[in-house]
Image (tube, rainbow, N blue to C red; front, side):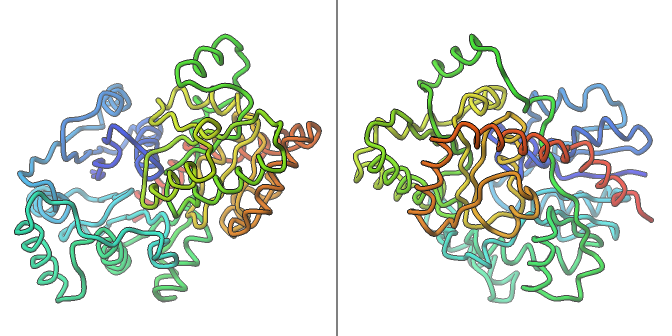
Length: 403
């Protein structure tokens, strides 16, 4: 059997949730399956780490599909590839489906936050050099979708999800919560085709780090000092980063002698300007540290050094960073939302993400109670041990090879 995979997201140099999902599923499929032939479709030159992942496995091949334009690689070039050299199965782990595809096509839907929490997403058009280019792209999009959508990222998410639900043979949802959200918003008629496969985390990378010299060097590299609360994820409205900064300001007001800082690690997203404004408004530029992009191999050391990990998100499909934190032996405080209850059980402290006072109180509680922190660490390690990318890939392989 020939299994094609859209590896364009896995091939990105700066990865976040869906890109890491694609990367690690490919990595573990390569380790698990020596029987089937795989073709990884790329939109640009292969990254060194993706090349290294598949190099030992001759049944995995790369195929770069050249395309002269910045946009429509999937709808244009990958669609053409499906016409001229169609695989037996196509797996799209983190993007939209091509217009043409084999009958056995599998697509992963990570969440539908853009519909449930539409105000957390940017609705402006794609960034093009010229206004003429933007108008032309909007015209093409409106013609193709019969006037229903324009070329904004929001409209593209809405259209591509509906298209995948209609045309994919199987949809993978990364949580039972996401599956139910899809059925509630779209239609119960898709119930049979949606399968739940939980995400994992990189066990070989995320584990408790105790080397003090290693910790000192990494913290020094990024200009960080203990003690600190830690957040990892996009700095954006959807992740509720601005509320975390406000809650931290309240914590500092009620604990004026505390030397605990707040470290925010992640790329800027929609709403980042508000985060910056709040930091300036509360005069927290020395207490809120944003080191920018951090190499993934350094993240576990920073996790292990944190006093606590805080995840104030308003909506998630899964929540990989919390598993990473737990695996590194960090007490965790997370939003009380259904999906995190599903994934994390009783392992973390939960708080209302829309109540800054409650979040500030949770920060104070975990900072001042060492016995509580030990208990949270123990519960977190046990919970994280229930997840792995190997298990995710094994369940995905079963879906890909179903007849």
